[in-house]
Image 1 (cartoon, one colour):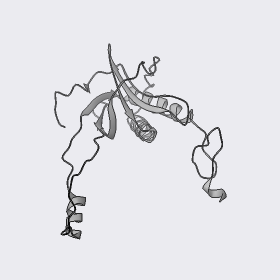
Image 2 (spheres, rainbow, N blue to C red):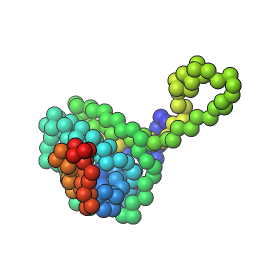
Image 3 (tube, rainbow, N blue to C red):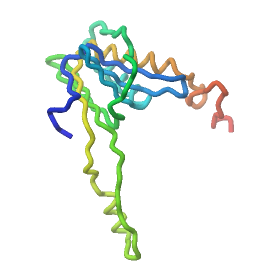
Image 4 (spheres, rainbow, N blue to C red):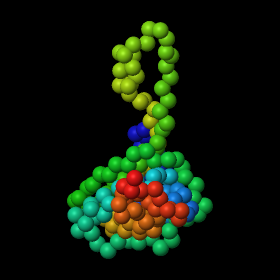
Amino acid sequence: MSDMNSPFEFEQLDAFIPGALGEPGNRVFYLQARHGEQVVSFRLEKEQVGMLGRYLGQLASNMGSPDPERDIAGLIEPVLPEWVVGTISVGVDEESGIIQVTAEELVPEEIEFEVDDDFTEADIEELLEAEDTSMGEQAKFTLRIAQAAAFAEAAEELLSSGRPPCRLCGRPIGIEGHNCPRWN
C-alpha cells in the first residue's frame, strides 16, 4: 500500500530498536519505534532482526558512523504489535546521511480455485503465476546514521543472548541438548 497518509511514517525518531520477550528458544522478536509519547511495535522473525542489524551496521560503517545513539529504555511494555512484518527494505540518501527503513505487513496469501475434471497443467501454471494483489500496510522509518549503528549493536547483542549454536551444524542448542545431524 503506497498510502502516504500511513499512520506509521516516522521522520524524527527518538528510538528504533529490536527486542525480544520470552526465554531463549521461545522468544518473540519485535521492532519498536518511538517518537515522544508515541510507541509502535511490530512482530518479526529472529532472522529479520539479524539481517536488518547486519545491513544497517554495514551502511553506518560505510557512511562514516559516529558514536551509536543507544536507547537506554529498551522495549516499552506492554508490547502490542500492530502487525507481523513480511518484508523489509532499506534506502539510503548518502548526501543527507539518512537511512529509510520500510517494513511491509505480512499478508497471508489466499487463493481460491475449483478443481474439476477439466483441470490441466496450464491451469496450475496460471495459479502459480497469479500475482498477489492483496497489499498490507507499510511502516516507514527515517534513521540517522547513529541510530542505524545503535540498531546494529542492539541486534547483535540480542541475537548473541539466545541459545548457543552447535559447533558442528550451527543450529541452536537448547537446555535439553540437541540432535545434531552431523553426528548421525
